Structure formats: C-alpha cells, structure tokens
Length: 288
Image (tube, rainbow, N blue to C red; front, side):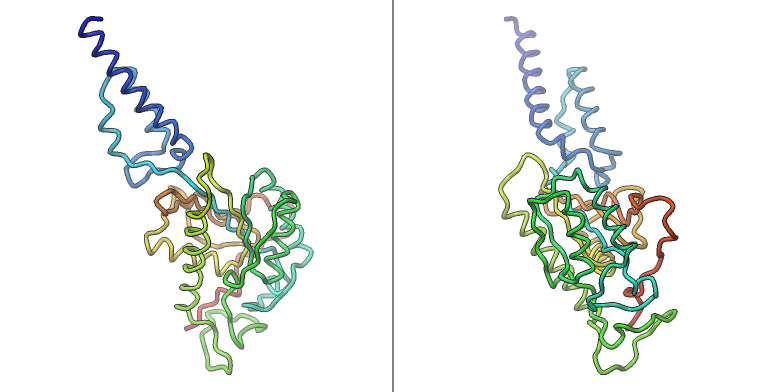
C-alpha cells in the first residue's frame, strides 16, 4: 500500500473511531446544547458527517462538550381539589381530589402511559399520592414511594383560609414554614433523591425515567432555585410560569449532575372542552 493510501486509511479509521464513540452519545445530543452556541445536538452529528465526508480533521469538534442524559425526571403537580377551586390555602392540609382532579389525573396518566418509568416518588399528601396512583394504573409493577419532603409548604394558621390579593404575613399562633426552610427542603430532596439516587443506580444504555407527583409550590420553588444555583438551565422557548393542576415539567439530568428543563407546566394533555382551568394557586401566596 502506497504512503498516500496508508495515510488515507489511517485518517478514515480515526474518523470512524470518533464516529463510533459519538454514536454512544446519540441519545444525549437530542437536547439543546446552549452553552456551546449550538442549535441542538443534531448540529454536531451533521458536522461530523460533513467533516468525515470531506476527510477533514474533527478534533476541533471535540471542544464541544456533550453530556449523556442519564435520567429524565417528570415533575407532575397533583389534580384539582375543591380548595384549589375555592381559592383556599391548603399548605399541608390533607385534601382529596375533586371529580375534576380525578379526571385530570386520568388524562395525565394517559399522556404518560408509554413512558417506561423506573422509579416513582410522591408527596404523602393524598391529593398527590392519588394522582400518582392514577398515573401508575398503566404501570402496575411500579410502586410509588411516598415522602414527606415532597409536601407542599406548611402554611401555619393560614391553612384553610381563603387567599386575599397580595396576602402578607401577619402574626399567628402557628407560623408558616419560612421561605429559606422551604427552599432548602426542596433542594435537599433533589440532591439526595435525584442526584445521589441516580448515582447509586447501575449504568444503563438508556436514561432512567423518574415520576414525581407533588405540589405547585414545590415544583415552582425547586425549579426556580435550581436555575438560580446553576444546577439547571432552560432549553430555548421554555418559560417558567404558572404550574397548573396535573401539569408536566420535564428535567433531563446529564452525567455531570446538571439538568436541562425541556418542558415546564405543560397541560396540553387535559381534555378539550373542560371548564376553564385554574390559573392561580392559593398555596403560592406572598408572605414574609
């Protein structure tokens, strides 16, 4: 084999080796790589194909760090309760789903029917655990783990009271859980149950799918503070806004422990023709 042919073969084999290694990360490049100024992971794939076709060096592409997705977390708010509909602050009151809430839980269960869940966690309050139960009707082999740390914020004497516009904290006999304590609780749960929990699982070729049913205050507080801390970022076009009943929020967790929010507060699965959905949450009143 002449020198030029040998050189071509070596370059080709090196490129094939790089491509083979890259294929192992195909499942991770589907999410947006905003940190590196790329539209999406497919851009990297197209670049590699182009470079390989032109017999060019692909080393410069290795500067773009692409992390494998090791888990996909589905944060689902519980279905509607009568207290939700009436604008009553629930906090950690153990209220049940109303008929509309049961229907909503059935709708979200149907929407998530094809997801191969590996783990399921829920607040131990019945409105969240019942929502999890209805979702898992389609996953009969999976048991939900109920956890107190996923409860809504404790609202003290405000629990059971109607919310007022711009409600402020006033002296009560039983004080609400402080904002700092609530934030620390939600972040502690994420770090312990999600990040450390995932790290303890066997390596898998596919990401683990984790269901979490909890409360609007928990989801909003946890997500906003994960973003603020730099642990999580948003994919383009994802807006952090209101988290409605049975809304779905999806966070992809990569092998470096960081997360990308690919969906927030999605309620597109709720049946058309239903009465107007609530756009407020009494448990997220502003108190000092």
